[in-house]
Every structure is written in structure tokens, then in C-alpha cells.
Image 1 (cartoon, one colour):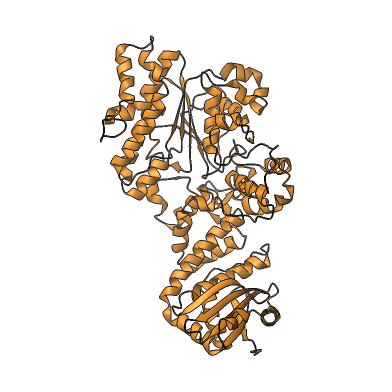
Image 2 (cartoon, rainbow, N blue to C red):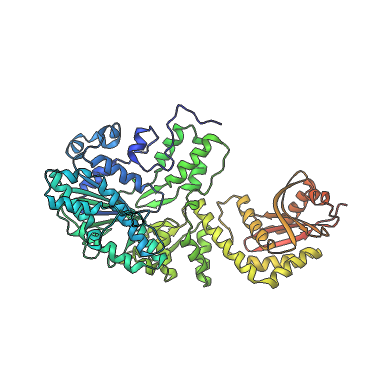
Length: 594
């Protein structure tokens, strides 16, 4: 199916506002944040949001609005254009320095420093007119040349001394203010990526010192700064990065217009600007209606909604756009893990591995069941502290979007607990995936139980199969969410059994393989073809395991799931029906119809 050519293209992966508008792509209007930003009056504003929630596109939009020489037509018909007085006073009135740190990643400090120099060098080269500006002295022009000094072959791309690098953003601001006679707006996107990469690369202290020095010069002692906006995933502890900057508390009212506060932090729990990162329900409905995809609303809501930013319910825009693009070519396409597949999900993996205590495992059980847990959240952490305890990992999961929620409204203490929950089906799948990965690792280690199960399967010992599989089920988090579809629950137990059997070296194990008049859950062939096994798994909502086993065996017979094995020359075929409910199962052996 070819998408309707009369509709605007979807902005898949487009984080350049000017390109998006000039190419006529669909844009969810977030320009209202410009007015709120100006009314806030903070010198420095830091927005923390999970990845893939539109941070870079919003920063690009701010650049296009404020920058001298910008194209005002980009904002025609958008929300901000209705505020004519604000536009007349601010649109195209400021020099803007836009710096993205998302690519400052290397395995050692020197490599990361070179990449940082390159990002700053390219940002400075946008203002090449400074080299010939009549408003700058020859010495000031020399200062500018130090920012764009290129290396020789075999040297780094840009050459900067430590002193020049630390002072680079402040220096560029001073030069631009003198040239234009107007103070500078500084936009720093993904400010915390160099710190994250440094943590994993074991050069964290060196990077902290460098970034702290740059930010202190650019954001704290910079007389040429009009205001600055930063984005990132995390609010790094002010002791490490934002030392000496006065913070505006998340719980305070917005500062009065014109007042000067050095640093305003707006995290996912702050109601201010809550609708500007990600899509609201109304925006998603409008998009679906525009593309004629309103029938997909339920699936999109279940999979990609559920994030709570401040007081707003938010959808992940990356997921929504990618799934809508898929639906335009394949209307029957099922939701996929777009957001989950764009990262390694290290936080969830580490969290699951640390859940040794039964109480912690029970809390995770509540979460995957669709329930909530109450935890103290620490929004200010260093990367060094984040993996130091399970308690800090709760905060990390909340700030990075794997859990959502907000302060418990009934908790009147000075440090209220946060009510946390898994936002949607996609994120629940991430948790379950990591749980299953850990379970498979534990399965490999428990060779005795594995042999017990496989020996029982091969011997036609349904009671032994039942006993061994129940032992496994008691070890793993189950799926009990009442809102979950029965087929998803069956897939969970199917996956456990498949994972166990995959470690039997001399068995060929296949899943959902076409056979007879359908697709059998699990088919097993011994390498010497002396034995074949058919397994059909059922989840029983009412706990009637005996009835579930009966239905499974009837399905095997009715659809002839043993046919493929017999066609392969296997004479002995054992057929098992296994029914599951929570952490219990029942197994039975079917009759041979030969």
C-alpha cells in the first residue's frame, strides 16, 4: 500500500525545525513554549526528559525563532505567530549559539576532548564574519581564530588549548555581543551525554572537571549571556557540574518576568512546560484523524501512551510517528518496540540483575502486573552514584522514562514518596525481556533441573514435566496484569519453556512452526530422529488448569500438529498439553493417534 501522496510526510527522525517546515512535513506545534520561556525570566533553564521526546527539535525551533537573520515564514500559522507583540520584540533579534553534545563519545578522555573541540569549532565557524568584523579589534579577531584553528594532517580536526576550550562558549558570546550589540542566547542540547560516555569509559572525573569549567564560564560569569537553555536526560548533581549556580526549586512558583535566577531545573515531575515534550492525547488523535488512521488509536494508546510529565499524560513521539508510518504502508501492522530498540536499555538490565531480595522482586512483580510502587526519588545524582544501589536505580528508571508517575499527593512529608508505574506495553516488554534474559542465564547454570525436565519430556512422564516446570515458574516473575490479553500471557509461558529447551544440545527446537492445519507452539526433534515432541501451551484466566490442558491436547489433535514431525520420518511423537496460571502449571500427555 502506497501512502496517500496528498498528505504531508511524517517527520521521521527529523530534528531540524527549518528542514521540517520547508519540506512540508507534519509538525505538532510546540511553539507555545517560546512565550512561556520568555515569561519565566531565568538566566539558565534546564529541561530533563527521556530520549526520543523531541528535545532536539524544540531546541532547533528556539534557534530558528530567536536567531538574527532567521526565516520568520517558518512560524506562519503556528501558535506563537498569534502573539504579534512578542514576535516583533524577539523574533530574529538575538545571536544564537547552538551546541549539541550528543555525539561527544569516545573510549578515552583525549578522544572525547577532541570531539568536544570539533563540536565547538563547527559551532564557531557559523560566525565566520567575525574574522572580518569592523566592530572587533585585531586581538579579538585573533581570539576568534583560536576557536576555529584547524589541525594539520594527523592532528585533531580542531586545535584548542585547555584554556581556550574552557572559555570557548563565553568567548564566542562576548565576540558576538560586540559585533551585534546584542547579548547572546546559548542553546546546549544533550548536555549530559559526554558525562554518561565518560562514566562508561572510566574517565568521568576528567570530563566532569572540563564540563564544569566550561559551564561555569558560559553560564555563571558570562556578561554577554541573554539566557541559556539546556536539555538532557538527567539532572546531574550541582556539586559536580552546576557548582555555584543558584537553583530554582522544582516546587517553587515560576519566577516573575524580568527577575534573574541563575538556574531553573524543569524535570519530568514539574508541571511547567509539561505538554511541550512528547505528544498529548489530543495531538495524537488529530494526527491519526489527518492520516485516516483513527482505528489505530487504541493500540497506540496501549503501547506508547502513559508517560506522566508534570500533570500531563504524554505519548512517546518517536514511537507514534514510526508506527503511523508503518501503518500507512501496512494497515494490519502490529505495534513494535521503536523506542526500546533505539537504546541498549542498560538501566533496566542492571536493575533486574540486582533484584536479589524477595521484597524487591515482589515490587517488580507489581510493576509488570500493572500496579504501582512508592519510592523516594533523588533527581540529583552523579553517574558514579546511579548504579551504586537499587534505591538509586529507581530514580534512574524514573528519570529516563522506564517508569513514570509523580509525587504521592497523599504524602505530606518534606520528601514525599513518588508513585511509580510502568507507562505502557512497550516498556513492560522491555522489563519482561530483561527478566527472561536473566532467567535464561540462570537456566544455563541449573543443569540438574534442565536435565530433569528434558528427561521427563522424553519419557512421557507428564507428572515429572509438571513438577520441573513448576520449579522454573517459582523462580521467575510472571505476567498477571488483568488488562493483558490472554495471548500475551501465553506467549510469556511459551517463551519460558522455549528458553529452557533451547539449551538441550541434541534437540532441535522450533517455535510457531507451520504443521498440519496450523502453527504448533513448540516442536522438538531429537537429532537422531528417534523422538519428536509437540507442546501446546495455554493460559487459563480462571485458574482451571485441567480444562486448559484438555483444550491444549484437543487443539493438537484437531490441527494435527504432529504431522510435520511424522513427515520428517519420526515415528515416536509425544504430545503435551501444558496449562499455566500465575506461578502454577499442569501438564498431560496426549494419546498417540497412530
